[in-house]
Length: 461
Image 1 (spheres, rainbow, N blue to C red):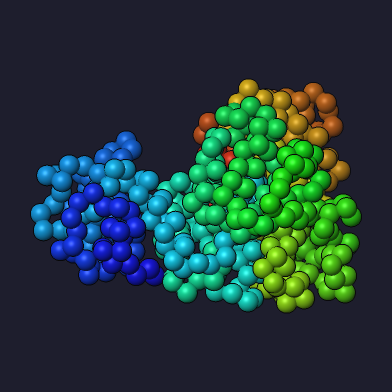
Image 2 (image 1 turned 180 degrees about the vertical axis):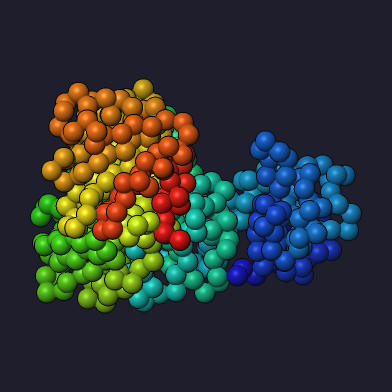
């Protein structure tokens, strides 16, 4: 919990009005949503589709003790401390920078097309083996959420882990300059947001914005086999580089990997005698763990001290988690996010699992792929192996083309590939009629496709 006085906030932001009457009012939280206002909060009225200034009375009712203010002072509530600024969003970001410098933790920033949240959760586990840690909660990873994350940081925080999301160029640079990371991590370059950025090369350039605010002699940790990043780091100065990945040319790489239903074990070149365990499926998650372990080493935590924490790390909900399904089946729920690279990886790992029942995949449309959407969706079909997958259910208008391609190729029996659009009820009903004891079912899509509703319908009571 923060503790800042109105006087301190006014000075930090260069208040445009006189606030000395309220100097000693203590602020213990910061928020912009009056429905979630905590007692003792500084209310930040943001201006978007609605003008947050209109809701100041709701904020006061719900416990706000002061507010930032960019509207005319004549519109401010009487006998209530407001701190006038030119732009409330920029003031929120400046206040976050001020508080970050005051607490002075080490800052770890994480971005990437996939694996950001899992890597964040793993990095928290690693860092918590030595430090007091605070991290991004939920999807608070944009120009509003990141400052709120910083301002919710306890004053005794030693390491803060900040996830950085984006949908367009320039956004990660803003976040990096707010956070000024000591350590920056890029998890991978995929196709997320290619609709707005046009190519993987542009996505790589945008992800590299994370170095904009990195402190001098800070560290960039990235997948060393990604050619697009190799090209972009070769002329960097003033930043240390650390790589991870499957190839032995990387600074940290796995020697042996064994992936099972609920856990993956592996050893690494840095200390081959240690068997590292992560409680999630997938060789692709080994890369996320390698990034987290590397960040730990940069901040003085050797793998011999941090590896055991990874075995207990808590994965954010709806990211590659197993749920018990109806009729004794098991559901691998990965319905929060999807891009072609990530979808192929999870399909390939799911295909390798051993079970006594059928293996079924349910794939939904991937969003924000723009003009390349059809081509990128079609690329998924080559990951679907009829020797490993018994039935394929495809949902959405983009996945219709995948179904057509699979039918035309005749690799699967025609009645093993199913296509649905619109109402999900027929999809759910057909799967319910097929699921039996010991069947495994993978459900993967972009969150906006809402296959989470299918997951919920298929869960055991």
